[in-house]
Amino acid sequence: MEPWEEEGPEVVKRFMYVNRKAPYGTIYALECLEVVLITAAFDQDVSVVFIDDGVFQLKKNQDTEGIGMKNFSNTYRALDDYDVEKIYVEQESLSARGLSAEDLIIPVEVVSAENLRDIMDQQDVVISS
Image (tube, rainbow, N blue to C red; front, side, top):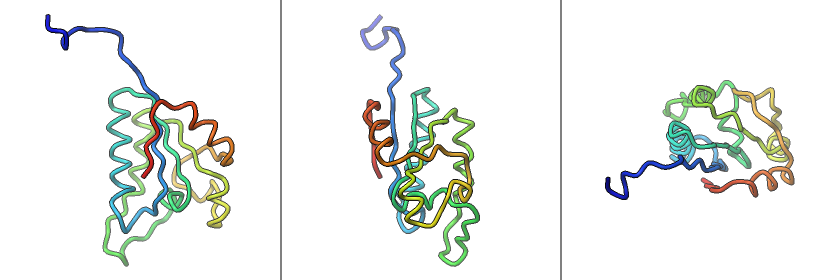
């Protein structure tokens, strides 16, 4: 057996994906969602965070007809199918944009910026878009 073929204990890492950008106008939001789903498919411990304008990615009833882009917000419902249960939204970002957890398309844990820093400190990998 070659060294790269050796079987050992599976390593599970804690990945956190931080979404800071509005859902449309760039490819960041959609591509981040795709990477989250791929990472989760490999049985890693995945967390997703929405801060700043990233909170708009989860807003209910998005109408993208006027900008000629496909609304992909319903795809966030697939997170549950991939066992991505750690979904955080920063309270200060929601409040600054006049939103609450009830305005979002999926259930989330709303946390303060201070608590979010503590959660980030517990991750092995933090990727921000």
